[in-house]
Length: 123
Image 1: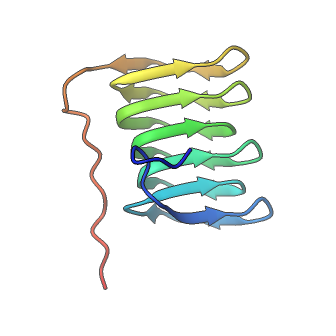
Image 2 (image 1 turned 180 degrees about the horizontal axis):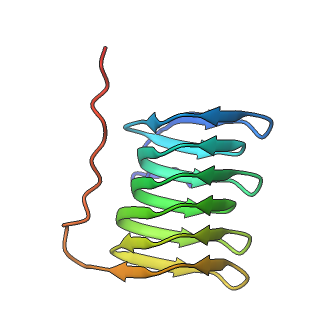
């Protein structure tokens, strides 16, 4: 799952963890717990037990769990067989596996006007 296409894993939210707030990362973020807030990252992965209530902005988004919010992805969105998205999707490529659930609108554009905008990290 982590090739040259996906950046290194920066953040993991465990299955028994609940985060309330926003997350911004220049790497890959995996959610196995619950996030209540928006997320911006190169790649966002929701594991089977994970859920997000908020919007996602990423180059690549993979939903194995649940998302209640909108997705803005500059490269691709993949909804795995146990994945659920309740919200609108804007992306260049969309893949919905058999058994996945998607309720919302999708807009697909091949140009790069969908660039996600990571929040600058203050150090």
